[in-house]
Length: 350
Image 1: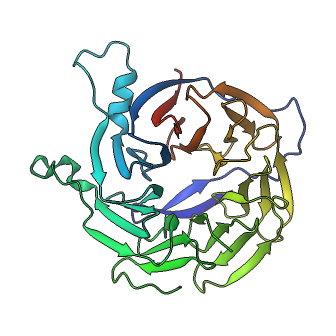
Image 2: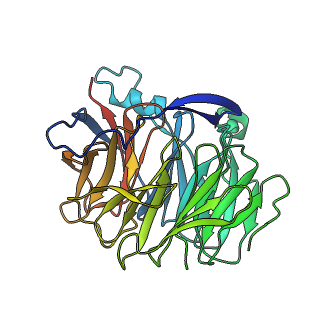
């Protein structure tokens, strides 16, 4: 189903699969392509979160050591080449030190020039990215703007227009900021908040186990899915590109697909244990597959989004289960980071 979305300040046509069109028939699943993985870097403490830029050219990671690392994807790919002749490649192009507590979440501005971070020190810091290519500014390691919130900032999400920023905090209601004036319009714990593709809605996953859908304009809660993961915490929730479904993950070791219009459970993805960490369930770039983490077996697990069948499971290559995964929006590649402090890049094997 084609829809329109914002990207780099423009409206773009997005082709999304219809997840309800195919029944859960085992044996009809697609094969997930094999990937190669490479250790990229290490933080000095637990690597807690990661995020690709909208154009897929950069990826950032945040750590319990309070630092943020920015990687250039083209340099990561250069590292993967077996016949690299230009000496060691350094994919980390900038490291930011501006928080005093662990980083909880990151997001890129839709135009890709600004990175925002949220942390336990109750601040949201803004970093200008276009200066990475300005040699005279290579020593800049601090944010150009800081927002002081009243609560632990657990999650951040830019509106597709780039004019607003949502923050999920320990407060019962998400905080909405105008990034031009930095005015806060809005003042159950919300560990994750995410806008839909067009910004018409946003979704929150909370510690009380409720998935809530909100109107992106009025900020009114339009639907609550109580007990989405039983009595367990809902740790992540994201929209499909066509905004018809929400994919959620919880500490009950289930991943669920919900219909936005009715709140009805459409599909369920089983077979991966996640009861301790703030685990995510994510789509690949085409939304044909779902990726998540099996804490018990320390594996990356992949399901066919249509049939719900588990189609692959790979050793994570982390010491201990990864804490976070994020998929590139533009290609068959993803990143993982974990308690072992390491950051790994995964790319389809050609």
